[in-house]
Image 1: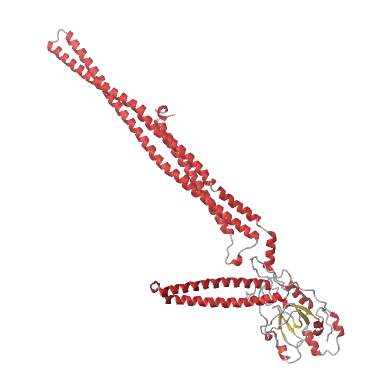
Image 2: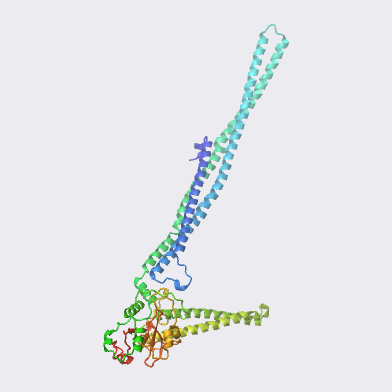
Length: 564
């Protein structure tokens, strides 16, 4: 079906239709643009959501290793990739659909304008031909009327007997002139009519059909372009569906990777201190005061009274230190991690040694590279001055020496903690899983207290606990024993004021823990010092001095064999 034959007289209607087609094309382009903005905003919001919930890690220690956490962060990564695919959809639509539509709409407007101008010119030319033909027709009509009047005038004079011959001759000449002019106008009108009919036939059967055909082809191309853009609109998203499906499959795999058993084991490895649970509380013999001899003097009694300790209070403190949910101290972290339990200390030291070894390897590689560069400069001085590398080389050597010293120092601490844990029957269980390292209970080298504001302190100095009364009687009898203790762990006692002990050794208790994590003890030979409270199993006796020999000979019995 052709517009030229069916719509030959609907030029204005086709003008409006083609304009509507372009308007519809631009409307669809606007729809695509808004869809692109939606996709871009959606992708941006997804990325912001991922960024909000992703961990802000400052060190590797803060990386979550629980399978549930790792699964969640894998889901976040997949969601971030999903957001990227939404951006791909937006870019594809912008390039393949929206951009193409805008370019085509511009070309379509130019082409439509050209075809309509050609149609208007053809119509103007046909109107001009019609005017020429109409003018010749009117002129011919006018000349015919004038000739007719001349004919009537001649006949009137010719029949009039009173008319002179000259008047008749003049009327005849006028008739001939008008008749001749009428004949010429007739010929002109016939020619113009023939020409107009030819142009009109050409206009309606050749020119206008050709213009309408071009407009029809233009409109059909617009329709085809819209169809292609509709498909491109859908294909833009269909192309990324396989990748989006992989993202969703990755989320499902992340969900399946959650292992509650492994997470539970990580909790054990993260918070395991290396300590053993506390033993049974010993029997406390309150009947010993019945067997006291009269030989107890006033001074001795006063000393014992001054050394009296509320057993309930002491037991409460001991329970607080061993309580499962006791508060963690907020003390300053020590360089050797001695504030941590043995197992956590070992892991921290091993982690630091690994990091130092990596840094040492980097410095060694840099040293090797600098030496090679120095050799090249020495062989080819034009490439550079070998002396310019000396400061950097010296700095690298200093860094290597410093790192080696640090490694040696940390290895010594690691050997110390591994020696302690190994001496207790290798209670420590190694784990190949990297996990979060958190501070649990205090190690015996530090202090453990229920007070959240209590700082971690080292062993107290001897003179720090003497009052004026102690100074006055410093040369008198030693302080009375208020109980005894059994060493659960060995203690080196390197610091001043501390007392070394072996595992299983029994000592006097002459001053209880004041809340700083240290207890004052004495050997049978009279040697005194402070030992970590968490290293010993304390038994306090009320108003009595315990003879340690019985406890040594019978370490499994908690009732002293002899009292003084």
